[in-house]
Structure formats: structure tokens, C-alpha cells
Image (cartoon, rainbow, N blue to C red; front, side, top):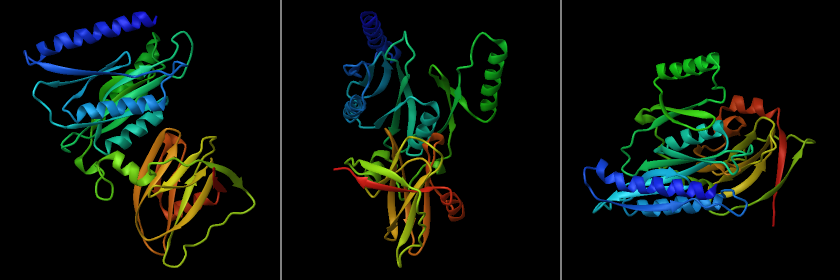
Length: 342
């Protein structure tokens, strides 16, 4: 089976290279091809994805841009004589359609747009989680169009006429709201529509997500042992001249959300947990990490004020909520106590 897939990949790649100049009316092109490697168990590791992303951005710095992603091969090309560093790339791995939608929208506010995806399934004869690796591209000039994304489940599609009509109605409703079809994966459709320029994040957060992520999450990993303390429920006011920030994890979940501020990891919340810190007034960068997924935001803290940052289960959000809403949620949560592992 691997031989057949490799043959198809090589044939497709040759066809792309041979016919691309024709599409460009005789203009010569040069190409770079990168492979997404698997580990010994036939799975794609986070390290392999990170390596591929770096290779793509190194090529982009020499003027290459994304062309196609097929059979584990990324193809990038450029016109001969063209070496302008115009694009940046991110690879978004996900096995969950709703998380993917939230990740796409988060990236979109930093100027990234969907360019393609690769669907990886370790064994086609058995039911495994399907990994969808989404390619995101950002125009460094800042002139690219921003999009709002929406996904629609397609598992109900079959020869059943009623189900097909329901799907058609959903697509029509999305179209009436300005969305247009973009791509499809085994279990979902991806739809998009242009966002107003004002939706782009700027000011405290740079349009480059990686820079914002480094400011918020830092460059080193810290692991915590965490336990839930149901015997006490402290909810102090800020210390004099300081701000206090509560980190809330609403909804039950076995997953843990690790939180950082200004590049320093602070602690971890399980489902229905919270913890808090006192912080100096001023602008701070906050990070929440759940597995391989990150959320970042910037918040300017005022002295003697209380703030609530919430992470939930739906689409793994991380956002500031009002004090009234935060205090209401806080009453239902248990204290989380984290200790750094050595």
C-alpha cells in the first residue's frame, strides 16, 4: 500500500511541476519539496510538524510560497528571479472539528488565512482519529484579506435524501449569511467570509501570533503536579496597589489547562478549578495551553482592580469576563493547587 501511495505522490508531484509552467504562460519556476515524516509507530509527532513548519518558513524567506500539500509532501515554488520574503506559515494540527474552527479564527485575527490541509489517517482499515493538518499563510505586508471561519459537520451525508436536503439547507443558510465554501475534510466542510479590517488584532498584541505567543507563553516548558482543594475557597481582594487575576476553568474535563503570564508558567487548572495571582499594574501577556493548543491575550491591569480570565471546554476558549460574571462562576469552582515538578 505504501508503494502505491508513494507512486501516486511522485506522479502527482511530477504532473504539478510539468504543467505549472504552462499555467504561468511559459514562466519558469523553481520548486522545493518537504516531507511530513512519521515516527516508528506510523504517527505524526509534534516535533515532525514543527520541523516541517520551520522548513516552510525558511523556504518562504527565500521567496518560495505554498503550492500544494498531498500524500505527506509539501510543495513550494517561486518564479525564477523572485526572492521577496512575502509570506509566513503556520501548521495547525487538530483531530477535533470544533477546536479547529476556534484555532482558525484565533489565527485569522493575527492575519493568517487558510491555504490548504492534509488529512492523515494511520490505518485506513481501522477506525483511528484522523489528523487534519491545516496550512495557514500570512502576508507580511499586512494587506491580506481576513476571514471569519465556520465549519459544518458532514458525517450525516449519505444517500438518504432527507439528510442530503438538511445539509443543503445548512449550506444555504451559511451562504445567506455571507459564507462561501472553501474546503472539505472527511467529517466537515470549511466555510469562510471576509472580516472587516477592524477585526484584526493590533495595539498591545502584534499581528504576528508567534511573537505574541513567545511573550505570553515563554520558550521553556514547565510541568506541574496539581490537586483540587475542596476544603477552602479563598477569594481575596487585590493587595494594596496591585491587581488580582483569577484564572477560571469552567466545566468538567479531565484535560488540564496550564496558564502563564509574561512568559512564566503559573499553574494548572483541571475542570471546575480556579487559582489566582497578584500582579503589578500595566500591560501583561497571558497564555493558556491545553495539550498542543495555545490561546494568548493581552490585558492592561489597573491597581486595586480584580480580573477574571476564563477557559472553558467549548472550543477551548480563553477570554476575560466581567467581574460580575467572574464572581458568579467562581462560587461554583474549587481551588487548584499546583507545584512545579523537578
